[in-house]
Image (cartoon, rainbow, N blue to C red):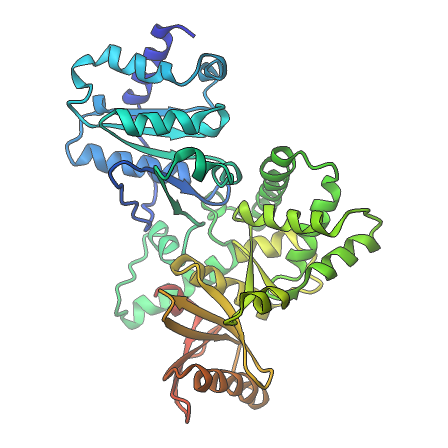
Length: 432
């Protein structure tokens, strides 16, 4: 690749005005000396988020000449595998020599992980140039265990998920102020029924069911084979697929490594138990599946107990799973997990001393705790008694004066001996 060709690519990137779509609610705060890396499941909108940041910079007065926007999927850039990424800065400062170390330059690198040695290039860029660097790419490769070492603390990761319900409302141009009028509430509730069916992946929001299912299934195959099989050179891809399908069929349910291993063995797969554990870890690294541990002061006891499994998108579960084991209650719990996970990574399930279970314990800053129970409906006295008994017992054990029950549509305030229990519909929880 010649220097002139690299200049042409840079100028092409500056000439294209970004189409930014619905603005996301994730605010990335750049820190001096650190590259901002956006991570998340495939097709959740990471590249679009970068374009939105770029558009805000231009709107704030940053010259387009101070922006370097490169998508390394561009076939003209593949030769950088051999020539090295240094050609990027060489070409830029040949075009604009007056800017070097005098004006801040904003680098946007999409799919940069395609180029070997990108970490050391970005590290040098952060150390030697007056710049801000934004990076997106395949989540599994962005989460490589080597990155933290190779970047030497010069990066900060930001998580992006598929559209939240609030972002879906923005996409639909439906107003959702903190206090809703009766008309606005009806519009929001109607929109929630749509969101419940389609989920949050931007590409499927307006597709009919058959196409949505097909797209979800293609995402599933791409995550398995691009993010896991190819990256880790897996010798038994069918075993990986069977693990993923088993976990989706058991979404919002307890699982154990022994149960997974036994299931694969029953299908004729000859794998070591440690390999099954690696499969699960890699699926989680791709931001496709998430495990939730038991809340326990002892980490060893927490890890020894079965874990619960959730998918990044509740609608994807219905598109991929067989549907034999997943019911509406499991889907609602998966939905609630995704809402909570956007807000805090410290999510556990809780078991009282008498063995009763609460679906979620959220821990913020190691001290602030919240208990959340999920139940499709409290209309049945038997169900209500069971769900509230577990929550009240947990509230007393954890000395919490409030607890939450998330339902499909019901709403009420309950005064109990343990404290106040807020019963809220799922759409209300999703709006914060």
